[in-house]
Image (cartoon, rainbow, N blue to C red; front, side, top):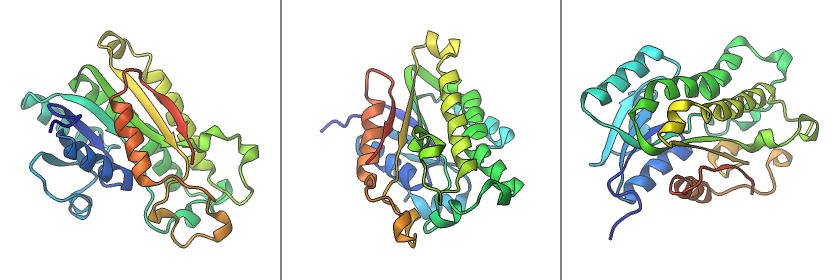
Length: 242
């Protein structure tokens, strides 16, 4: 039985993450080929098993030299892609409370650099280095957070995630500017942004009960929305809450 991704190639950045790993497995299960990008070999070994239609690559999205080298390797082997997915983040198990307990005054420079490096600089780097490898009428899909849907004044007082909130807003604006690029418009490449509310993953393990959202999205639902969006005729820009 033919799958929805038969004959397609997808490039996934952030393949080691909870969402990225499931995206990779779903596309492979639907007959597609996937080039999955991990920050390092350790991440890859702990994430996804070796499979026939899966290529594993190692690259830091904040490193232009590493990205350039990876893009050149695809170009040299005459490989192009139908989809480029950016789902790079940092949500390790049990880390929610730590990440929402740091007000702006207590942040160190590294935290600020990490948030913007992962969400903004990394996305811009990937866009600049890999878009030329996308086929006409291909898709770029960026996975973001729906936290930016809410005004700061509506967020609970215990939620100290200012750096993350600002970086997510910057990523959202970056996606809007990427959509304006002449090269993408001329080749009819659609840019999709799906921003999700709280997702039921181990990231929330051990959290203070009153800090856990009463309703959370299930991972299976999130991945289904991403897969369906890739097949949509119209590039989407959705905030999806529980």
